[in-house]
Picture (cartoon, rainbow, N blue to C red):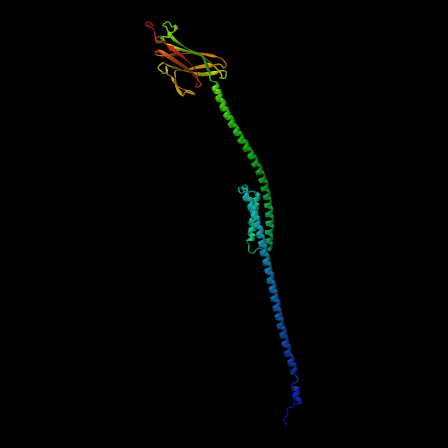
Length: 324
């Protein structure tokens, strides 16, 4: 048999399916490529969606953060206004009013929302509403403070006026008291009696009861002092006259106490003579001065009333004769 490289008819029939197999392979490769491209496309789409979702979430977080910051700033500003009001008005620092209680409640709720890291948009909106209401309450409080401040200023003006009136009144009272005191002193001095017609009679008392005036010292039993008193200002009523009788040796006769005088200091007195006086009338007074014995010489009689010396007189007693 002759060998040849040319294909025979049988050979040709056996190898004819090769192009079809190659087409199937290309189809599979195409499908795989398409699937791979689809997978990559899906992955790229999903990645884009995830990135968009992250961006949206970040935008939302940023928005929420900014909104919380804005709300916090507004809240701080409201608190500053409130502090300036309550700090400047002591009357608002005492017992809480209903308005203050409402303000405190809103402050507490706002703080709770702003301190919540996971606060929702609805909660932030609630905080915004509360801050608006808080500002409204603070405005009402400011108006109240303004009213109270105005009333306080009016009261201060009234108090200043009253204090001035009080000071003027006290000055007037002091002045009137001083005038009254001076007037009382003047009246007191002016009501001092004056004494006139002063007489001193040395008297010898007889066994029969008869009295005889004598100037001989050893015969004198008593000195009868008489004088008239008068004052147009002095009120009717009791009054005391004081007699000081000084003997020739300078000693006070029959001392009965000490008299405080206005100008001469304390002096011992001989007798206190009580009288009953009628205003505007002249009254005669007689009073006897007794002693164990009277010496020769001058006896000085001083009359005092109201601490002032109102009169004085002198009576001389002489030594008796050979048969006196």
